[in-house]
Amino acid sequence: MEQSDRRSNRKGYTLVYTGDGKGKTTAALGLALRASGRGYKVLILQFIKSPQRTYGEHIALRKLGVEIRQLGAGFTWTKTPEEHRSALREAWASARAEVLGGDWDVVVLDEINNALAIEKFLVDDVLPLGEVLDLIRLRPKHLHLVLTGRQAKPEILELADLVSEVQAVKHYYNDGVPAVLGIEY
Image (cartoon, rainbow, N blue to C red; front, side, top):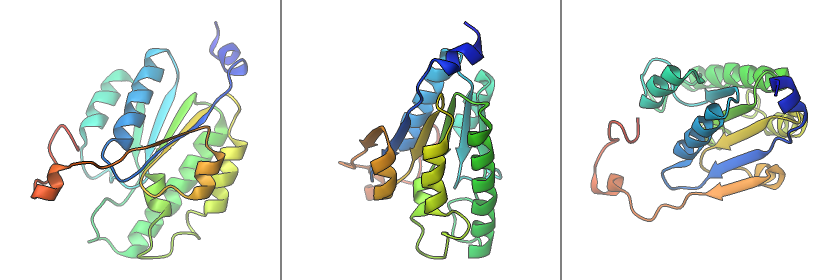
């Protein structure tokens, strides 16, 4: 079946992975892997991770032909609020264009919920919640849209077709263990 035929016959869904436990991005990456294996065209846009660092998922997914882009300023707070705001503004413009362009079968907006929940500086003017909600409503009907990150807004949860909450039960971070190569990055 031709890709355009497959798209016209498919209903896309909005999926949200949220919660305070580890595994939200990992779940989205697993979904991306599965979709790619079925011939779907997949794009992963990371709202927080910086292109100045290398992450294991980028190495693996690029080998598989899955497009992944780091659009953030990083997890560090050594950057200025304006650097973060600028990165979020550009990430949001890119996300909107890619989703509405209709070229993809699956788009993952990784850690967009984290970005929307930032309280240390203003983000609503560069990443407006209302526009995110509109994007969910206006996405092409064939597109599966995945949003990850802690503290998903209630309005996003309401619009989603699937919401999975990852709960923290136990984590080695609490024992002072830093991020583990191959597990967290």
